[in-house]
Amino acid sequence: MTNVIVVIGAGQIGQAIARGVGVAKHILLADLRLESANAAAEVMTNAGYELCVATCDLSSRQSVYALVDAATSEPRSPG
Image (cartoon, rainbow, N blue to C red; front, side, top):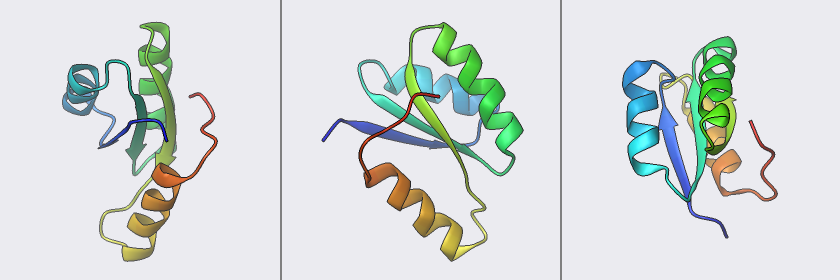
Protein backbone atom coordinates (compact mmCIF):
# COMPACT_ATOMS: atom_id res chain seq x y z
CA MET A 1 0.00 0.00 0.00
CA THR A 2 1.16 3.50 -0.80
CA ASN A 3 1.82 5.89 2.05
CA VAL A 4 -1.24 8.11 2.27
CA ILE A 5 -1.56 11.42 4.06
CA VAL A 6 -5.11 12.58 4.77
CA VAL A 7 -5.54 16.33 5.15
CA ILE A 8 -8.95 17.71 6.00
CA GLY A 9 -9.32 21.33 5.01
CA ALA A 10 -8.24 22.60 1.59
CA GLY A 11 -7.56 26.17 2.71
CA GLN A 12 -4.14 27.78 3.00
CA ILE A 13 -3.25 26.03 6.26
CA GLY A 14 -4.35 22.63 4.97
CA GLN A 15 -2.33 23.11 1.80
CA ALA A 16 0.75 24.14 3.78
CA ILE A 17 0.46 21.03 5.96
CA ALA A 18 -0.03 18.82 2.90
CA ARG A 19 3.03 20.32 1.23
CA GLY A 20 5.12 19.83 4.35
CA VAL A 21 4.27 16.20 5.04
CA GLY A 22 3.18 15.01 1.61
CA VAL A 23 6.51 14.74 -0.21
CA ALA A 24 6.79 11.30 -1.87
CA LYS A 25 3.40 10.29 -0.48
CA HIS A 26 -0.10 10.21 -1.86
CA ILE A 27 -2.27 12.99 -0.41
CA LEU A 28 -5.99 12.66 0.10
CA LEU A 29 -7.20 16.23 0.39
CA ALA A 30 -10.68 16.49 1.86
CA ASP A 31 -12.93 19.47 2.41
CA LEU A 32 -16.58 20.13 3.12
CA ARG A 33 -16.83 21.75 -0.31
CA LEU A 34 -15.65 19.73 -3.30
CA GLU A 35 -14.98 22.95 -5.24
CA SER A 36 -12.42 24.03 -2.62
CA ALA A 37 -10.71 20.64 -2.65
CA ASN A 38 -10.55 20.62 -6.46
CA ALA A 39 -9.08 24.13 -6.61
CA ALA A 40 -6.38 23.23 -4.07
CA ALA A 41 -5.71 19.94 -5.87
CA GLU A 42 -5.10 21.75 -9.14
CA VAL A 43 -2.50 24.01 -7.53
CA MET A 44 -0.78 21.14 -5.75
CA THR A 45 -0.84 18.84 -8.79
CA ASN A 46 0.82 21.59 -10.82
CA ALA A 47 3.49 21.75 -8.10
CA GLY A 48 4.21 18.03 -8.54
CA TYR A 49 2.24 16.43 -5.71
CA GLU A 50 0.27 13.21 -6.19
CA LEU A 51 -3.19 13.59 -4.73
CA CYS A 52 -6.87 12.95 -4.94
CA VAL A 53 -9.80 14.77 -3.38
CA ALA A 54 -12.84 13.88 -1.33
CA THR A 55 -15.58 15.60 0.58
CA CYS A 56 -15.90 15.21 4.31
CA ASP A 57 -18.23 16.70 6.90
CA LEU A 58 -16.53 16.20 10.26
CA SER A 59 -19.86 16.54 12.04
CA SER A 60 -21.09 13.38 10.30
CA ARG A 61 -19.80 9.99 11.47
CA GLN A 62 -20.83 8.43 8.14
CA SER A 63 -18.88 11.07 6.22
CA VAL A 64 -15.75 10.41 8.29
CA TYR A 65 -16.12 6.64 7.77
CA ALA A 66 -16.43 7.24 4.02
CA LEU A 67 -13.22 9.28 4.10
CA VAL A 68 -11.42 6.45 5.91
CA ASP A 69 -12.68 4.02 3.26
CA ALA A 70 -11.40 6.34 0.52
CA ALA A 71 -7.99 6.61 2.19
CA THR A 72 -7.57 2.86 2.57
CA SER A 73 -8.89 1.71 -0.80
CA GLU A 74 -6.88 1.02 -3.93
CA PRO A 75 -6.38 2.14 -6.63
CA ARG A 76 -6.10 5.88 -6.18
CA SER A 77 -7.00 8.23 -8.96
CA PRO A 78 -4.98 11.42 -9.34
CA GLY A 79 -6.55 14.74 -8.38
